[in-house]
Image (tube, rainbow, N blue to C red):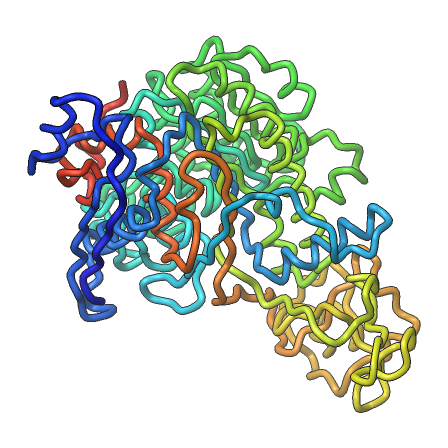
Length: 571
């Protein structure tokens, strides 16, 4: 990569002191009157991928953000919405499904974030993989440095090498908020120890180390801590996120404890540590919630821990069918914003729609799109609860999936239905489009996954029904099934998949970024995923000034040097 020259205009400065500060070659925090100052950030050319050090990734991401004007941002608050696995075809199909549920043809509909003024594309690859996972991608978003598949808040290395990872702990913007005097929160529909939320607060090379029983003995002996323990210890003494909402009680309870809502199940911890009890002792005025009613009752608590399921939270469709004792993602988002808005100094909040990804892994487009609509509801709740004058909202995905949007369906055709032709491409208008064997097919299909129509040890040959958790493929698919009498719009219908896999895989294509609020103008063009961190940091004065105070900024106040986690103490 050639040197990147970044230029922007410098607004007139209001005083000689500010002029002197900008003229100085010493790192300094920018005046709030300064937008972006004829910036020039050198990014050395490196041999890819061998030359990609953490420091190089950090500087390269800083250059991308500053080039686009992120330093002009004056955000008091930042909310990053992460639609896990929310590929562009998923967004398009969910947009149509929501529009059709409203009674329209669907295509003209917009999901909540599609009204945002700023858009970009994010390149999602990991340092070791063309098609990434959620851990490495979220680590890029939260630390400004790309890393390996499975990495949780550490620089690239071997996912099973604890000792090597101990010197590679990367500071996240959630941790930086502590040093900047800002509040923070985490919301997810996954286990709170799952890859995406864990990447905001934990540091392990392997995403699977969620509890001590899953932590290899050698890793424990070398000094690695499981993810659940790291969360609880990160919130001690008034530090870390003051509100944490999601699932995954089993990671926090001992194997001798019954789950409070599913008493036939026990916790997974073997170290005898009841981490929920530890959190409650450390937060005597705090509120611990296990259902929607308890979350509502925790509105005035100074700290909140909500664990609403033994495992991941329910799919929204199933949550409603079961009587909705769990809060929705929109409910949790509203609760988190209300809680954090009462804190001085502004806040950073991460909200994950986790089960978009899991539904696609399950080969079930209905739930993937339904979860995307629920995610849109949560973004809309944040839009209603905040002002674009002081709150930067970023909506993005960590990676794509193999869901494809195909054929030539007529305008308004049910997005989960079978393709009905609209012109000479697919026969007579209104008629089912047929393949070369005379069989109808659906608009949405997966390239691989459990929807393959061959026989398995769980279901016979033919269309599959959710859930389809097969261990063995009994026979390959022999042609395609006849879908004439199959309701492909039913919630449990699984789209056909070409390659039989036990779980559908991620996709390696780019994903979208949408933004509104201070600094959102920097969201444009094609970005490396780690540049999202730098947009967040550069657009938020408190965050960037905390870095500048440690001498990590250039003469124009742009954070360009890699921070060391241990150098920052909570205010």
